[in-house]
Length: 502
Image (cartoon, rainbow, N blue to C red; front, top):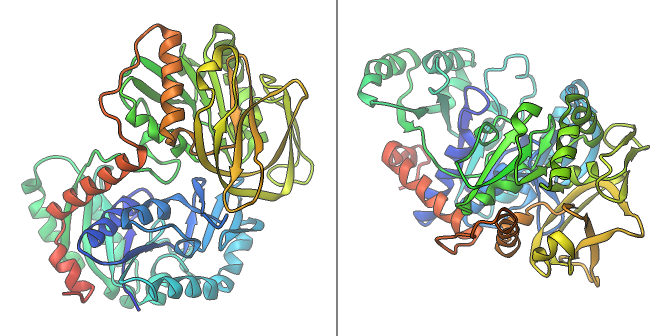
């Protein structure tokens, strides 16, 4: 069986996912077969495996850092919030249904055998399993039948590294308070502390570190600096959703929907030096962008209503009239149509008028579409002609079935992987508006470059690109950069000793 190490945090967004990804990469570089694991993930960013099963993207990123194919055993339970009080529950990649939080809490113990089986299947194949916790292990109201923090550590008999975020302040209280709220046997599992996101001179911290070690009886295994590493983030707390990634001559605005999902669809624009991506949630922030992107959402009808009530829908319509490219992905694509109808209550029972920019209607069904696809764009006409015949690939995750009007022109033809088919039409376009169900469409170099070239041409500026690198190559460089930085600040010798390796 594999050796295990678990990364827990004092709170959400303390940096657990990043530290776990960095350790995954270090173990890979050091010649070990490593794999990530998170028993229960709550996130709206998900991914479709090659088998057509759904899992959280954080473990996908960590699997990429390990250099292995993501599988649902790495994330057997995924919760996708649909309301403030409930989530869609996904077990081993399949939808088990929608559940209120209080009902899920009562059923947690029933999922322990599923979690154990998934973990044991991984542990039989790999040398090291890097387990990630969720939130904080000191949430005393949630500790009963815990399956994701200390409960998971016990299942795997894993030593724990506890991570605190100093950037928000109060890191010493976070770490000491977390340890103090744990039972004695749980405290014993914590083998080291990590302070994350530090800015400044580390010598100033030394008196505090000494007192921290004395109060907790735990060694500080590293002070990790605030790093500029471009690795996909997990959820709505992501820093990339705030402000502008950088200044660029091409201004792309992404509408930050209240229930935004799979915002990592836009991450690949980091390779385009002329492109600035900004997330906005107010009309006053919109401006006059070159393109407006409507991303995915876990509740299309509710977010459509928010667009309308906030005034952003009217602002986007004005942008379209002025000539901005309007691009919708998945839920954002559904919003661009004439009508969104959810009679079965797959997300939110009822019907709402769409933005009317594309000639199609969406009807929700109880069965979710989950598939990996590849294909190419159709021969497009008019303003979008430059996107014709471009390679596309990615995955679909949606419960809506979109019906095109007879006059609608499909955007692309895609082939489902591992399925014998002659291809199917996906998405549609009209004038300067287009939409698709395909998550990850901008990861494909050929389509993304053509899209940016189109925006440059419309603006009358030359398209510039210093280096030709695929998005996959870019991500691998970022993992190596992360590992290099962590090796400088973490006591890896002690971490290997904790793992009883070497």
